[in-house]
Structure formats: structure tokens, C-alpha cells
Length: 473
Ligand SMILES: Nc1ncnc2c1ncn2[C@@H]1O[C@H](COP(=O)(O)OP(=O)(O)OP(=O)(O)O)[C@@H](O)[C@H]1O
Image 1 (cartoon, rainbow, N blue to C red):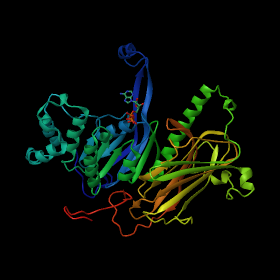
Image 2: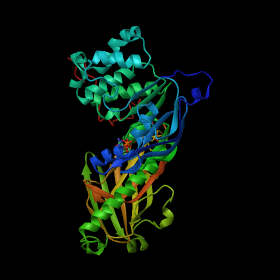
Image 3: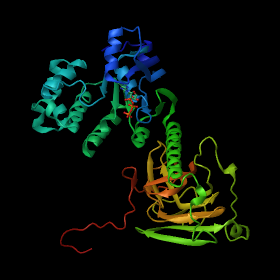
Image 4: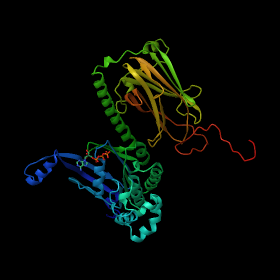
């Protein structure tokens, strides 16, 4: 472990990765491995598999960086090479400062040692003296919170207990760089929150490298993200842009899967889908839920032309090719928020009723039309959302215009700017195909008022009573 040299380039870049690559030798049969050893390289019995290739990264001091990507894309391979637990096939990694890493479960622990013995072993490897470890032992035990198990060999621990102990150690060794690989997914909710509080405090002065499939955690912790796909850096920029691009790619992959499954079931003949019962003409459907309503109307374009539907024209100009995605079988034509008087607004009052109208034109027959929206805060975290899933099953015909009306009370939000994304899909809770997803299509600034907001948003409280025992109110 190296300490930071003040003023050096390593000081500015605690992690520098150049042309990094990892190649595995894949053997079709176990005996091929033996043959390879016997032939000493004169014949090849394996095929090469590059888990990671041509990766160049500069992580600057104080940056909070997420690594995201689908299963098997190479995230853990990259982190292991940065931490020095895996040797690269090509390229190099330069690190400086004290790097504390939470990688695979229990890595770095000796299974025969007790929890306490492993705390001493790991904390001393991370640069603490025996005296410093003794002084911090109570805090480490309190953070891990595994009771008397701390005196048992770690081979008897559950996966949750292992990650608790490992996290407790890294939380008390004052690292300058913290690397976390999916560790939070193992602990229970209370422990995950304890870790998130620690990581949040750590990011105020330290450098963080964070791997997670939880995009909300990623957006709330990291300002920069790196998307890895099939062992290559696909994109490296601000977290919000990466999340948009990555989720778009995941939806496209999922749409392709659903398309393939549909082709298997109907033999590739989309015309085999039965003609809708309620597809022609127009209609209304309303569902009550909790205290508010979701309300969907659909009209034929003929009705629109005769003035029954508000003038909405849809064509591919409604698509932002850079950001929108979907299979194009419907086009979102407008997304409007209205106040309680019906006026369009981008400054809704918190605690007051609003209506969100999402209109879309179908470019094909849609068997089960779904509408959804969600709202992100300025860090990209999803704050709330709603969908017709589980509430509506609407069949829509080609060239019909659908409007969904979501009536709800605007929650008491933290002050700031919020973006609303809308989507229309075909399917149900078990799986749906995105027809058109419009990210960040409506930006609004809620009027917060003077009421304090606790957390991401406060509930719309029906009543608050203060009662002194013995007195009526
Ligand atoms: N020892 C190994 N031998 C052969 N292939 C390996 C080995 N270790 C990893 N791989 C392969 O390298 C690729 C990258 O694996 P890696 O664990 O880095 O992915 P990941 O992005 O962390 O995935 P996940 O999100 O599922 O944790 C995968 O295809 C994996 O099967």
C-alpha cells in the first residue's frame, strides 16, 4: 500500500488505468488443460476470452464514480485489477493513497480466524497500528453489530455477517479511496442504511469507486459514471446521462427479447393477434385507487379531426432521436401538468391537487396499453411515479389517440428543479414492451411553501392533532 505524495500526479489521480486488459483461457474440457500443460505452448487447447480490454481511466481525487453495466460486463474484473487482487494480462494500474475495498464476500478474511482476529489482520494491512486498532475496536464491533459471533471463526458466518464485519473495518481505517462492489445488496435494510450514511459522509472528502445495479443509489452517490459493456468502456460522463443511455440500452435489449418471445408464440405472424373488441370508436375508463384517480380516454383520429379531441398531431418529429427510445409503435404527443383550475403549470403547489395528462398516438393495434411516468430530482434519483399497471387493461387500435389523466396531490418536495419522464408500453406487470419512452420531457419547479420537508418528500398529511392527556381538543 502506497501513501500519497503531495503535489505528485498520483496525488491528483489516485487511480490511473492504462490500456488495461484481462484475458482468460477457456477450456472446452478439463482434460484440455492437462494437454495444454503437457504440450508447453506448442499447441493451443483453449480459446481466449477477453473479460476486459483497452480500458483507460483517470479517477481524480475526491471524485465519486460509479461503474455500471450488465451482468458479466467486466465490472468486478476491473475493480479486482485496480485493487491488485487480480493480475492484468496487458496494460497497467497505478494507485496512490490508502485504498480500502469491499469486493467479493469475505475476500481478505482468513476463514479459520475469529472476527476479532480478522479485524486486526485487515486493519493492519490497511495501515493501522495495533494500538490504533485496539482504540477503534469497540466502534468497529458496534458498526458490525454481530454480537458474540465476533469471537467465532468467520467460516461460521452468514454472507450478511461477513459483509458487516468487512464494512466495519473499512469504515474505521480512514482510507483515501473507497471501492465498493455490490456490498450493500447483501446486508439487511438497517445495515444498508448505516453503510449508505458512512459512504455519504466519506464522499465529502474521499474518492469513491462504486459498483452497483441499484441506479438510485448510483445517482444519489456518484457525480460521474462509467458504463462497461462486454469488457469495453461504452461511455464515461456525468451520471444522469449514463443512466439515461444505459436504461435505454437495457429497455432495447428487453424489447428485443419480448419481440423474439412473441415471434415464438405466434409464429412470427403479428396479424394473428385478434381484433380488439373495444378498439374502434372512443371510450373512457376510470380506476379509483387510494384517494385519487387514474383516468384514460381514447379517441379515434377521426374524432380528433372533428374537434372532439384537443388538437394533437403526432409524427416522428415528436421523437428526440438522441434520447427517446421504444419500438415506435406509439408516439407520445404531449405531456401536460395542470393545476386544480385546469391551467397548464410548471410550478405546481405542493399539497395541492394536480392532473398530469399524457397523450399518445398509436401507430399499430396495441393489445394492452400502459402509461407510466416518474419524477427525478436534480441528482437523478427517482422521487415518485405512477403507472396504469394493475389498474387498466386498455386495447387501442391503430391511429387512435389515448390520453391518460393522473389525478394526484403534489407531494411536499425539497425545493429545486424536477424532471418528469413519461412512457407508453404494451404489456402487463409480468413484462412489457416500451413503445415510446420520453425522458425528462417536463421540467417543473414545485412551490414548496414554508412547511419543512423531511426526507426526499413529506406525506400529504390528512390531519395532525396534539392532545394533552385529560383535555379534550
Ligand atoms: N476466472 C475466470 N475464468 C473465465 N472467465 C471469467 C473468470 N472470471 C470472470 N470471468 C468472466 O469475465 C466476464 C466479466 O466478469 P465480471 O465478474 O467482471 O462481470 P461483472 O460485470 O462484475 O458481472 P456482475 O454484474 O454479474 O457481477 C464474465 O463473462 C465472466 O464470466
